[in-house]
Image (cartoon, rainbow, N blue to C red):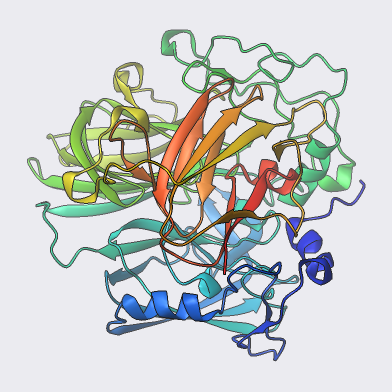
Length: 532
């Protein structure tokens, strides 16, 4: 198996090219942190960043200690996985605070390699964003790092590393920011984290999967959308078998486990090809469907469910059997309430819903879109047998809500304004060569797309590939067209164009990338840089 350079290694090798001085030291290994900046750009520890943080008016301090460590996790039904995790839980222990609070979190790295923490969706100060060798140095094995920042907006967020493929292990946890003026009324709240899982199963690791994928498919019979054909199989549940789409016939060396390259997974909702990776397990809150978590309530209770897709390569279609859901938020920001039978979540996306629960026992099913496998939790409000592991509630065949159908809540809608700057980003690459990139260029440390503070910026995503990509912007939220919702992660379908607007109001150097962890590591990412 050949060695594939990770984003972390490429960034580290390019510090001399990127230039810049040192940030104030936060790591207790004494290494400090590089401000990997080109001349003329705001440094992550610059005075502009400090001034923006001061305007957030830091509130009460919430102290948290977190340990990244090797662990053997119980996935349920006798299945265990040797992996990396935050403590001994999957997901990691929830971090909960109130908007306006200051989070002071200390991360101890007990892993065999460097790590970091990124706070997905938060508009926080740039030097706390957790991108190694851009906003901080990596946290070396045996070292610790202190993160401290004001949390400005309520909502559903999560935390995970921004180091190589580590996010596709067990290193993630919910981050819930409560609204001190919460307008919603509900009796219970559940956080539901969806994940695709392979680490520690039959010798598989995310690094080995990246190495296999990076060899590409070449002249193989690609099926699905890998070779350009899109197929049509994702949405007709009546024709669905619960067998996974086929892994590719080639396999990496036995020490890396079986082949995890996926072929023939297609979805109408995703415009064709559904994904690259055949995962052996799909999880809700760290549990396999044969041994699911059970949520309890009383009939008539109003329940708020916060959904987070922490997957590496899988979109999930989610439904609660015999119930409709009222969507109230996406990516932390309120929307005009909309009812639906099911939701589609790309990697990194979050949705909040309200449900008035009925009397009985009901499946909360997360279908791995296009991959013909499911994850499961159970709602119990009364007597009755638990649903089987492969249950497919009819709501999965009903109305499936995607972000483009939503409107921003009035209080958070982006004001009408012509863009001062337009940045066109063509999503390029293919499964055959595994050369995912933006504007035909794989990520290098010196890349910068310049913006100036105070500008209204328009991103134009043009997907020239045969695959869908969930595009994620750090440190900001953008608005979807036509009064659409505020988002930090948005699906761009194959062959389609998506224009989003945001206000440049958080200075620094910010990553923009596909949230398919393997596409990002292959090169589909870049940096948005504020001009000094």
